[in-house]
Length: 496
Image (cartoon, rainbow, N blue to C red):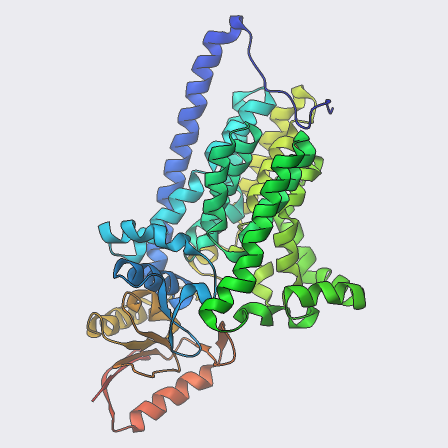
């Protein structure tokens, strides 16, 4: 039952319930912290296993490792362009300066695992604003605690946290904190979290803009909400049309994901007016509808009871559904990061609109549904141990051993070309090329069972096993290269 305010009023226990409330608060706070801690360690164990068993690759863990490593060595966000082999600043592809903030962690623990640990812990912290929002609006600490646990049990929260490192994944908790600080009118803290969230990607200004519009309408704070919306939109426009071209010398390399619907943001808008059927068809393909179903089912679609806040996810949903790149409508892919927090928070607000005596039951149903679906996410080891793009089935012990020995042969700092499977282990250096490019490489490590390669006309991995085989044959016939390792389909060449 709705009230005159945009969300239910904060619940305040009367004095007679004070002592019980205090005990209950402490109990649920402890329960949430214990759950976050256990969840983090379990997912880190899974992520670590994925890394040491060569199921995390150059895309995308290695890309982030190189950017952070370069920053720590005085070359801010420098990476090797996967398609051209040229050195560039990462801002020419994705505007995610947030990566630089991870540099101190690398200095303390120079391992790709420190980035995995940071991402998992950050996402776990998102349970706190979910709990606080629930406690504020649901009138029950127990119900709030159940929803915080449901956030952790939501399958795509876990798969996002434990998959390859992506700056936008850090936006999941940041957006939740943004909602909490807006809800409690702490605008300075909101601004800090919003700035951090936007720094994780060029499109992350759009959810902030939508959040500003929600705030303006829900709280009748037209000026403040309008300024937030303007700031968010400005970040994305400046990032896409000024920063990316400034560092790349051309438009975004990812425009190609939208060739079917206009090829650029302006092209999509133009297509909407000149051929709206194309847009409608792109939004209603079977995989798009399945994507929406998988996002909503664990939450029982209760976020639809708070449509204004749920609608903040629409900009990212449109970007995902309009894309020709199928991974963007895979719920395990990192493009879900700007969707999850708004559906979760809207679920809290939606349950707040249910009769008070039934809120606990609704929250419990969400937890049970999320946890049940999480159990059947693939199996788990496969779902969170690999990503849709370039992901691999578990490797044999012999193959893992061969890859480990091959990686150990490459001297630290030496320019190297590697298959995607070894990329995460070889990216903490200045020059890292991807098969089949070997440009200035002094070493080449090829996993002949890894078919993922980078073609010059694409910024992403594509499956081309024949390209891998041809590279090995070419290097074997080239007197300028010496084969120094060949075991279990893993081959290492050294420039002679």
